[in-house]
Image (cartoon, each protein chain N blue to C red):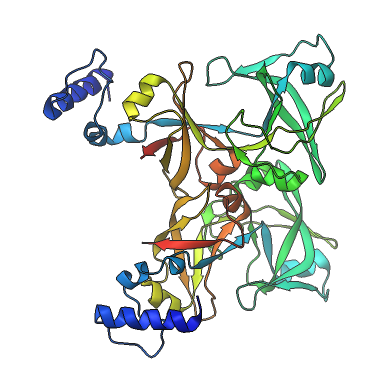
Length: 229
Length: 229
């Protein structure tokens, strides 16, 4: 559907529902108008994350040597985030995961994001957490080409979440930290619950699932999902 | 809840809803009565299947040698089905999966059940299918201690399904091959769609998901799920 047509539809809806027009054609949209457009319903792009590591500068220095120059592999969909060419090895009491990608930029604290299957494989009981919430999480050993780090904490399984800007949050009628459900299309589809809304100026609209969730639910990085409140 | 109490509740429900009592206390139960008991709602036990292989006698003879005597590891929940101590290696164009369990008894045709992640790992595009429906599926190579087999077909990703007896089907008000949805409890829970009902005299009540689905949805072999029509 063209943007003009979309804009026209919103205008019609606003007039019909008696809502005064905003300055932008995409806000505010009432829930009624939201239901009018099926294409718009499956509107949230899906981003699928494989297991990965965020490093602190101190840990990066130990693993790769001080002054090591990391090479960017590619930008990620969230502005300012990128994948590096470098990988590390993640080791737990029961096993090893080789070639785990490092994402940049460096963070205040090192964090290891695993799938549930990874956790069983290496024997680490990582809890379901939002990125950054690593208090009371188990550690693991990270092996790099120049050294190794024994983490005291930092292993999590990423909790399903949706990144969005404040404008998108307004458009969907949701707030930061709100729990919503998401409908996924296809033969392995369904409705997944307890998906956390994360609102920030710098976020672009995207739902994040890990590879295990995406494979189990038959969706990919090309899928679009529907927000259900 | 004790069986007596459960039976009494059903009798009350039957009287209240005007349904004539059957000979058994567990049938028939109207949808209204079904909703009265929350414990009963999450009533279907979950069985979680890791990747596995069913062998034909001919393929078993090639892989392990004619007259090889397989050793039973344990009985499975479906009557007459069991896991063997023996494993094989599954090989595709892009990789290998070691130690894939063989389930018995032998079948008419060899079948390899993989997770979607397995498929990516070994480079086999297995479709989502019910067990036994292997026409137009890709093959792979199976390696055993006495020889190897190049399958022409037989690789599938198991489609979500629920085994039940005719009595259970009547109790839940569903038919063989019907598609239903299932509600899964917990922090990674939700409602999964397109779950196929499989009715057979010998089946005991159990929903089957593969390890990837169970891990992604935060459930285990100890979980119970709720049928949603």
